[in-house]
Image 1 (cartoon, helix red, strand yellow):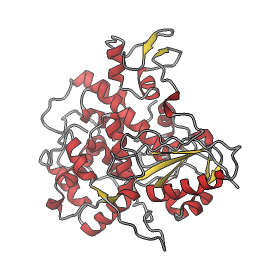
Image 2: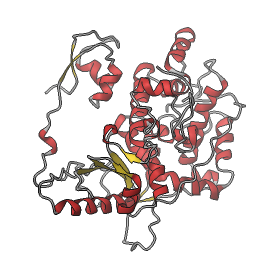
Image 3: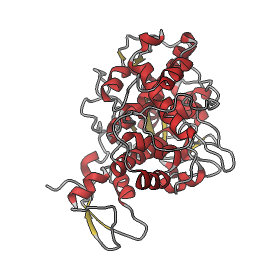
Length: 416
Protein backbone atom coordinates (compact mmCIF):
# COMPACT_ATOMS: atom_id res chain seq x y z
CA UNK A 1 0.00 0.00 0.00
CA UNK A 2 1.88 3.03 -1.24
CA UNK A 3 -0.65 5.79 -0.91
CA UNK A 4 -1.70 8.01 1.99
CA UNK A 5 -5.25 7.47 3.08
CA UNK A 6 -6.10 9.29 5.20
CA UNK A 7 9.09 -13.59 38.60
CA UNK A 8 5.20 -13.57 37.11
CA UNK A 9 2.18 -14.52 38.21
CA UNK A 10 0.36 -13.44 35.21
CA UNK A 11 -3.27 -13.25 34.22
CA UNK A 12 -3.65 -14.43 30.70
CA UNK A 13 -6.08 -15.67 28.19
CA UNK A 14 -5.45 -17.69 25.07
CA UNK A 15 -7.20 -16.71 21.94
CA UNK A 16 -6.85 -17.67 18.43
CA UNK A 17 -6.60 -14.90 16.59
CA UNK A 18 -8.58 -12.00 4.31
CA UNK A 19 -10.18 -9.79 -4.89
CA UNK A 20 -13.04 -10.06 -7.87
CA UNK A 21 -11.64 -10.79 -11.27
CA UNK A 22 -9.60 -8.76 -13.59
CA UNK A 23 -7.14 -8.69 -17.01
CA UNK A 24 -4.23 -6.32 -17.33
CA UNK A 25 -2.00 -4.91 -20.08
CA UNK A 26 0.06 -7.71 -21.44
CA UNK A 27 3.28 -5.99 -20.40
CA UNK A 28 2.83 -4.46 -16.96
CA UNK A 29 6.23 -3.15 -15.96
CA UNK A 30 7.74 -5.59 -13.47
CA UNK A 31 8.11 -4.20 -9.99
CA UNK A 32 11.18 -5.15 -8.01
CA UNK A 33 10.00 -7.71 -5.55
CA UNK A 34 10.60 -7.22 -1.85
CA UNK A 35 13.45 -9.26 -0.38
CA UNK A 36 12.49 -12.68 0.79
CA UNK A 37 11.86 -12.97 4.50
CA UNK A 38 14.37 -15.25 6.15
CA UNK A 39 11.91 -16.78 8.55
CA UNK A 40 13.08 -19.58 10.81
CA UNK A 41 11.01 -22.71 10.99
CA UNK A 42 8.82 -22.02 14.01
CA UNK A 43 8.03 -25.70 14.31
CA UNK A 44 11.63 -26.58 15.06
CA UNK A 45 11.94 -27.19 18.77
CA UNK A 46 15.16 -29.14 19.34
CA UNK A 47 14.74 -32.14 21.56
CA UNK A 48 10.95 -31.90 21.67
CA UNK A 49 9.03 -35.15 21.45
CA UNK A 50 7.15 -35.42 18.18
CA UNK A 51 3.58 -36.27 19.11
CA UNK A 52 1.14 -37.34 16.40
CA UNK A 53 -0.36 -34.29 14.71
CA UNK A 54 -3.06 -33.57 12.21
CA UNK A 55 -2.71 -31.21 9.30
CA UNK A 56 -4.97 -28.73 7.58
CA UNK A 57 -5.03 -27.84 3.92
CA UNK A 58 -5.74 -24.13 3.73
CA UNK A 59 -5.56 -24.21 -0.03
CA UNK A 60 -8.91 -25.90 -0.51
CA UNK A 61 -10.57 -23.28 1.68
CA UNK A 62 -8.87 -20.51 -0.29
CA UNK A 63 -9.96 -21.92 -3.62
CA UNK A 64 -13.51 -22.20 -2.34
CA UNK A 65 -13.54 -18.53 -1.36
CA UNK A 66 -11.92 -17.04 -4.47
CA UNK A 67 -14.04 -14.37 -6.13
CA UNK A 68 -12.09 -13.39 -9.22
CA UNK A 69 -9.56 -16.01 -10.23
CA UNK A 70 -9.27 -16.14 -14.01
CA UNK A 71 -5.92 -17.56 -15.00
CA UNK A 72 -6.65 -17.02 -18.68
CA UNK A 73 -7.80 -13.43 -18.29
CA UNK A 74 -4.54 -11.94 -19.52
CA UNK A 75 -1.12 -13.28 -20.60
CA UNK A 76 0.50 -11.13 -17.89
CA UNK A 77 -1.18 -13.24 -15.21
CA UNK A 78 0.46 -16.39 -16.50
CA UNK A 79 3.78 -14.54 -16.87
CA UNK A 80 3.79 -13.50 -13.21
CA UNK A 81 2.59 -16.92 -12.01
CA UNK A 82 5.50 -18.56 -13.80
CA UNK A 83 7.90 -15.94 -12.49
CA UNK A 84 6.81 -16.72 -8.93
CA UNK A 85 7.28 -20.46 -9.49
CA UNK A 86 10.31 -20.54 -11.80
CA UNK A 87 12.19 -22.36 -9.02
CA UNK A 88 9.55 -24.77 -7.70
CA UNK A 89 11.59 -25.99 -4.73
CA UNK A 90 12.36 -22.46 -3.62
CA UNK A 91 8.73 -21.44 -4.02
CA UNK A 92 7.58 -24.41 -1.95
CA UNK A 93 10.10 -23.58 0.77
CA UNK A 94 8.90 -19.98 0.84
CA UNK A 95 5.30 -21.09 1.14
CA UNK A 96 6.19 -23.49 3.96
CA UNK A 97 7.84 -20.67 5.93
CA UNK A 98 4.99 -18.21 5.54
CA UNK A 99 2.15 -20.71 5.85
CA UNK A 100 1.36 -20.11 9.56
CA UNK A 101 0.94 -16.41 8.85
CA UNK A 102 -0.98 -17.02 5.65
CA UNK A 103 -3.43 -19.28 7.50
CA UNK A 104 -3.85 -16.61 10.15
CA UNK A 105 -4.58 -13.98 7.49
CA UNK A 106 -6.99 -16.31 5.69
CA UNK A 107 -9.04 -16.69 8.85
CA UNK A 108 -9.25 -12.91 9.26
CA UNK A 109 -10.41 -12.64 5.65
CA UNK A 110 -13.08 -15.23 6.35
CA UNK A 111 -14.34 -13.31 9.38
CA UNK A 112 -14.61 -10.10 7.38
CA UNK A 113 -16.23 -11.71 4.35
CA UNK A 114 -13.23 -10.94 2.14
CA UNK A 115 -12.37 -13.34 -0.72
CA UNK A 116 -9.45 -15.72 -0.40
CA UNK A 117 -7.35 -13.91 -3.00
CA UNK A 118 -6.73 -11.14 -0.47
CA UNK A 119 -5.20 -13.59 1.99
CA UNK A 120 -2.42 -13.73 -0.61
CA UNK A 121 -2.06 -9.96 -0.81
CA UNK A 122 0.97 -9.84 1.54
CA UNK A 123 2.76 -12.05 -1.00
CA UNK A 124 2.33 -9.30 -3.58
CA UNK A 125 3.24 -6.54 -1.14
CA UNK A 126 6.21 -8.06 0.68
CA UNK A 127 6.30 -11.86 0.40
CA UNK A 128 4.90 -11.78 3.96
CA UNK A 129 8.04 -10.04 5.16
CA UNK A 130 7.45 -7.67 8.13
CA UNK A 131 9.39 -4.87 6.48
CA UNK A 132 11.04 -2.63 9.09
CA UNK A 133 9.81 0.96 9.22
CA UNK A 134 11.76 3.85 7.76
CA UNK A 135 10.82 7.51 7.87
CA UNK A 136 7.86 8.22 5.61
CA UNK A 137 8.10 4.77 4.03
CA UNK A 138 5.67 1.87 3.91
CA UNK A 139 6.22 -0.84 6.52
CA UNK A 140 5.04 -4.28 7.55
CA UNK A 141 3.94 -7.15 5.38
CA UNK A 142 0.95 -5.06 4.22
CA UNK A 143 3.24 -2.14 3.22
CA UNK A 144 1.24 0.55 5.02
CA UNK A 145 2.33 4.18 4.91
CA UNK A 146 2.50 6.17 8.19
CA UNK A 147 -0.37 8.46 7.17
CA UNK A 148 -2.48 5.49 6.14
CA UNK A 149 -1.76 3.85 9.49
CA UNK A 150 -3.11 6.91 11.32
CA UNK A 151 -6.25 6.84 9.19
CA UNK A 152 -6.72 3.15 9.95
CA UNK A 153 -6.19 3.59 13.69
CA UNK A 154 -2.83 1.79 13.77
CA UNK A 155 -0.31 3.11 16.31
CA UNK A 156 3.14 4.01 15.02
CA UNK A 157 5.51 4.65 17.93
CA UNK A 158 9.17 4.20 18.72
CA UNK A 159 8.72 0.95 20.67
CA UNK A 160 5.64 -0.39 18.89
CA UNK A 161 4.48 -0.22 15.30
CA UNK A 162 1.07 -1.74 14.64
CA UNK A 163 1.87 -1.97 10.92
CA UNK A 164 4.18 -4.85 11.86
CA UNK A 165 1.68 -6.37 14.31
CA UNK A 166 0.23 -9.34 12.45
CA UNK A 167 -3.02 -9.34 14.43
CA UNK A 168 -3.73 -5.61 14.42
CA UNK A 169 -2.64 -4.83 10.88
CA UNK A 170 -4.43 -7.81 9.34
CA UNK A 171 -7.71 -7.03 11.06
CA UNK A 172 -7.56 -3.39 9.99
CA UNK A 173 -6.63 -4.23 6.41
CA UNK A 174 -9.45 -6.74 6.07
CA UNK A 175 -11.92 -4.23 7.49
CA UNK A 176 -10.60 -1.68 4.99
CA UNK A 177 -10.94 -4.05 2.05
CA UNK A 178 -14.47 -4.91 3.14
CA UNK A 179 -15.23 -1.19 3.30
CA UNK A 180 -13.84 -0.67 -0.20
CA UNK A 181 -16.03 -3.46 -1.53
CA UNK A 182 -19.09 -2.04 0.21
CA UNK A 183 -18.33 1.26 -1.50
CA UNK A 184 -17.42 0.07 -5.02
CA UNK A 185 -19.30 -3.26 -5.11
CA UNK A 186 -16.34 -4.70 -7.03
CA UNK A 187 -13.39 -6.60 -5.55
CA UNK A 188 -11.17 -5.56 -8.45
CA UNK A 189 -11.73 -1.92 -7.56
CA UNK A 190 -11.14 -2.78 -3.91
CA UNK A 191 -7.67 -3.96 -4.90
CA UNK A 192 -7.09 -0.85 -7.01
CA UNK A 193 -8.17 1.31 -4.06
CA UNK A 194 -5.81 -0.51 -1.72
CA UNK A 195 -2.91 0.22 -4.03
CA UNK A 196 -3.79 3.69 -5.29
CA UNK A 197 -6.21 5.14 -2.73
CA UNK A 198 -9.99 5.10 -2.59
CA UNK A 199 -10.51 8.72 -3.55
CA UNK A 200 -8.43 8.50 -6.70
CA UNK A 201 -10.24 5.36 -7.86
CA UNK A 202 -13.57 6.94 -6.93
CA UNK A 203 -12.84 9.96 -9.11
CA UNK A 204 -11.77 7.67 -11.93
CA UNK A 205 -14.95 5.61 -11.73
CA UNK A 206 -17.09 8.75 -11.61
CA UNK A 207 -15.38 9.96 -14.77
CA UNK A 208 -15.07 6.69 -16.69
CA UNK A 209 -17.97 4.69 -15.26
CA UNK A 210 -17.94 1.42 -13.33
CA UNK A 211 -16.01 -1.30 -15.16
CA UNK A 212 -17.84 -4.15 -16.81
CA UNK A 213 -17.42 -7.69 -15.53
CA UNK A 214 -15.32 -8.44 -18.61
CA UNK A 215 -12.49 -8.14 -19.22
CA UNK A 216 -11.47 -9.52 -15.88
CA UNK A 217 -8.78 -6.87 -15.42
CA UNK A 218 -10.63 -3.56 -15.85
CA UNK A 219 -9.63 -1.30 -18.71
CA UNK A 220 -9.79 1.78 -16.52
CA UNK A 221 -6.82 4.11 -17.16
CA UNK A 222 -5.04 3.46 -13.88
CA UNK A 223 -1.29 3.62 -13.36
CA UNK A 224 0.64 0.64 -14.67
CA UNK A 225 1.76 -0.23 -11.14
CA UNK A 226 -1.86 -0.30 -9.93
CA UNK A 227 -2.92 -2.57 -12.78
CA UNK A 228 0.11 -4.78 -12.18
CA UNK A 229 -0.85 -5.04 -8.50
CA UNK A 230 -4.11 -6.74 -9.44
CA UNK A 231 -2.38 -8.91 -12.05
CA UNK A 232 0.12 -10.16 -9.49
CA UNK A 233 -2.63 -10.93 -6.99
CA UNK A 234 -4.49 -12.94 -9.62
CA UNK A 235 -1.23 -14.64 -10.60
CA UNK A 236 -0.44 -15.99 -7.14
CA UNK A 237 -4.09 -17.00 -6.80
CA UNK A 238 -3.73 -18.94 -10.05
CA UNK A 239 -0.77 -20.84 -8.60
CA UNK A 240 -2.97 -21.79 -5.65
CA UNK A 241 -5.83 -22.67 -8.00
CA UNK A 242 -3.73 -24.88 -10.30
CA UNK A 243 -0.42 -25.76 -8.60
CA UNK A 244 0.18 -28.76 -10.82
CA UNK A 245 0.16 -26.48 -13.86
CA UNK A 246 3.18 -24.69 -12.40
CA UNK A 247 4.89 -27.88 -11.19
CA UNK A 248 4.67 -27.03 -7.49
CA UNK A 249 3.25 -28.84 -4.48
CA UNK A 250 1.62 -26.63 -1.90
CA UNK A 251 2.48 -27.47 1.74
CA UNK A 252 0.11 -28.31 4.56
CA UNK A 253 0.28 -27.07 8.13
CA UNK A 254 0.30 -29.14 11.29
CA UNK A 255 -2.43 -28.01 13.64
CA UNK A 256 0.12 -27.42 16.40
CA UNK A 257 1.89 -24.94 14.13
CA UNK A 258 -1.18 -22.77 13.68
CA UNK A 259 -0.72 -19.35 15.23
CA UNK A 260 -2.71 -18.41 18.31
CA UNK A 261 -2.41 -15.37 20.54
CA UNK A 262 -1.68 -15.45 24.25
CA UNK A 263 -2.82 -12.29 26.00
CA UNK A 264 -0.90 -11.07 29.02
CA UNK A 265 -1.70 -8.29 31.48
CA UNK A 266 1.82 -7.14 32.31
CA UNK A 267 4.89 -6.01 30.40
CA UNK A 268 6.85 -9.06 29.36
CA UNK A 269 9.91 -9.37 27.18
CA UNK A 270 9.88 -11.50 24.06
CA UNK A 271 13.10 -13.07 25.33
CA UNK A 272 11.28 -14.33 28.43
CA UNK A 273 8.35 -15.60 26.38
CA UNK A 274 10.68 -17.40 23.97
CA UNK A 275 12.44 -19.16 26.86
CA UNK A 276 9.23 -20.19 28.60
CA UNK A 277 7.49 -21.25 25.40
CA UNK A 278 10.47 -23.19 24.03
CA UNK A 279 10.68 -21.19 20.83
CA UNK A 280 13.75 -19.56 19.24
CA UNK A 281 13.72 -15.83 19.94
CA UNK A 282 14.31 -15.01 16.27
CA UNK A 283 11.23 -16.98 15.24
CA UNK A 284 9.14 -15.32 17.95
CA UNK A 285 10.33 -11.85 16.93
CA UNK A 286 9.40 -12.45 13.28
CA UNK A 287 5.75 -13.16 14.09
CA UNK A 288 5.61 -10.43 16.75
CA UNK A 289 7.52 -7.76 14.86
CA UNK A 290 5.24 -4.99 16.09
CA UNK A 291 7.08 -4.91 19.42
CA UNK A 292 10.06 -2.97 18.12
CA UNK A 293 11.75 -2.81 21.55
CA UNK A 294 11.24 -6.51 22.29
CA UNK A 295 8.71 -5.87 25.06
CA UNK A 296 5.05 -6.89 25.03
CA UNK A 297 3.25 -3.74 26.07
CA UNK A 298 -0.27 -4.00 27.52
CA UNK A 299 -1.05 -0.56 26.10
CA UNK A 300 -1.08 -2.19 22.70
CA UNK A 301 -3.15 -5.30 23.27
CA UNK A 302 -0.68 -7.19 25.43
CA UNK A 303 -0.72 -10.21 23.17
CA UNK A 304 1.95 -12.46 21.75
CA UNK A 305 1.50 -14.78 18.77
CA UNK A 306 2.85 -18.31 19.00
CA UNK A 307 2.39 -21.63 17.26
CA UNK A 308 -0.28 -23.57 19.13
CA UNK A 309 2.19 -26.08 20.61
CA UNK A 310 4.37 -23.36 22.10
CA UNK A 311 1.35 -21.32 23.15
CA UNK A 312 0.09 -24.27 25.17
CA UNK A 313 3.52 -24.63 26.76
CA UNK A 314 3.60 -20.94 27.67
CA UNK A 315 0.09 -21.09 29.06
CA UNK A 316 0.95 -24.12 31.21
CA UNK A 317 4.08 -22.41 32.51
CA UNK A 318 2.28 -19.20 33.44
CA UNK A 319 -0.63 -20.99 35.06
CA UNK A 320 1.78 -23.14 37.09
CA UNK A 321 3.52 -19.99 38.31
CA UNK A 322 0.18 -18.49 39.31
CA UNK A 323 -0.94 -21.50 41.36
CA UNK A 324 1.33 -20.66 44.29
CA UNK A 325 -0.25 -17.24 44.89
CA UNK A 326 -4.04 -17.36 45.32
CA UNK A 327 -4.12 -13.58 45.71
CA UNK A 328 -3.47 -13.34 41.99
CA UNK A 329 -6.57 -13.82 39.90
CA UNK A 330 -6.10 -16.15 36.96
CA UNK A 331 -8.01 -14.86 33.99
CA UNK A 332 -10.05 -17.01 31.65
CA UNK A 333 -8.04 -18.87 29.05
CA UNK A 334 -9.58 -18.02 25.75
CA UNK A 335 -9.56 -20.67 23.09
CA UNK A 336 -10.62 -18.80 20.00
CA UNK A 337 -9.10 -20.79 17.15
CA UNK A 338 -7.64 -19.10 14.12
CA UNK A 339 -9.02 -22.09 12.25
CA UNK A 340 -12.27 -24.01 12.41
CA UNK A 341 -12.08 -26.88 14.89
CA UNK A 342 -9.97 -29.67 13.45
CA UNK A 343 -10.39 -32.22 16.20
CA UNK A 344 -7.82 -30.66 18.53
CA UNK A 345 -8.89 -31.65 22.05
CA UNK A 346 -7.35 -28.47 23.47
CA UNK A 347 -9.65 -26.16 21.55
CA UNK A 348 -13.43 -26.18 22.02
CA UNK A 349 -15.19 -26.41 18.69
CA UNK A 350 -17.40 -23.49 19.65
CA UNK A 351 -14.44 -21.14 19.91
CA UNK A 352 -15.82 -19.86 23.25
CA UNK A 353 -13.70 -19.10 26.27
CA UNK A 354 -12.54 -21.95 28.44
CA UNK A 355 -13.45 -20.72 31.92
CA UNK A 356 -11.11 -21.06 34.89
CA UNK A 357 -12.65 -20.83 38.40
CA UNK A 358 -12.42 -17.33 39.78
CA UNK A 359 -12.42 -15.68 36.37
CA UNK A 360 -15.31 -13.68 34.95
CA UNK A 361 -17.26 -15.49 32.27
CA UNK A 362 -16.62 -14.32 28.76
CA UNK A 363 -20.34 -13.64 28.30
CA UNK A 364 -20.45 -11.35 31.33
CA UNK A 365 -19.71 -8.24 29.28
CA UNK A 366 -22.76 -7.06 27.38
CA UNK A 367 -22.20 -5.86 23.85
CA UNK A 368 -23.59 -2.40 23.18
CA UNK A 369 -26.55 -2.23 20.85
CA UNK A 370 -26.76 1.52 20.24
CA UNK A 371 -23.98 4.01 19.54
CA UNK A 372 -24.38 7.77 19.77
CA UNK A 373 -22.37 9.37 16.98
CA UNK A 374 -19.54 11.64 18.09
CA UNK A 375 -17.41 14.05 16.10
CA UNK A 376 -15.06 12.15 13.79
CA UNK A 377 -17.09 8.92 13.73
CA UNK A 378 -17.52 7.21 10.37
CA UNK A 379 -19.47 4.11 9.41
CA UNK A 380 -16.18 2.39 8.58
CA UNK A 381 -14.75 3.13 12.04
CA UNK A 382 -17.94 2.02 13.79
CA UNK A 383 -18.11 -1.18 11.76
CA UNK A 384 -14.58 -2.06 12.82
CA UNK A 385 -15.18 -1.06 16.46
CA UNK A 386 -18.28 -3.23 16.81
CA UNK A 387 -17.06 -6.08 14.54
CA UNK A 388 -19.84 -5.74 11.98
CA UNK A 389 -20.01 -4.82 8.31
CA UNK A 390 -20.74 -1.35 6.96
CA UNK A 391 -23.58 -2.85 4.96
CA UNK A 392 -25.12 -4.19 8.18
CA UNK A 393 -24.97 -0.78 9.84
CA UNK A 394 -26.69 0.73 6.82
CA UNK A 395 -29.39 -1.93 6.82
CA UNK A 396 -30.09 -1.80 10.55
CA UNK A 397 -30.30 2.01 10.48
CA UNK A 398 -32.01 2.42 7.09
CA UNK A 399 -29.12 4.45 5.69
CA UNK A 400 -28.80 4.98 1.96
CA UNK A 401 -25.37 6.60 1.99
CA UNK A 402 -22.36 6.83 4.26
CA UNK A 403 -23.27 10.14 5.92
CA UNK A 404 -24.01 10.16 9.66
CA UNK A 405 -24.48 13.13 11.97
CA UNK A 406 -23.30 14.01 15.47
CA UNK A 407 -25.80 12.89 18.10
CA UNK A 408 -27.42 10.33 15.82
CA UNK A 409 -28.21 7.02 17.51
CA UNK A 410 -27.16 4.03 15.47
CA UNK A 411 -27.94 0.36 16.03
CA UNK A 412 -24.60 -1.45 16.06
CA UNK A 413 -25.77 -5.01 16.61
CA UNK A 414 -28.46 -7.12 15.02
CA UNK A 415 -31.97 -6.21 16.22
CA UNK A 416 -33.59 -8.85 18.41
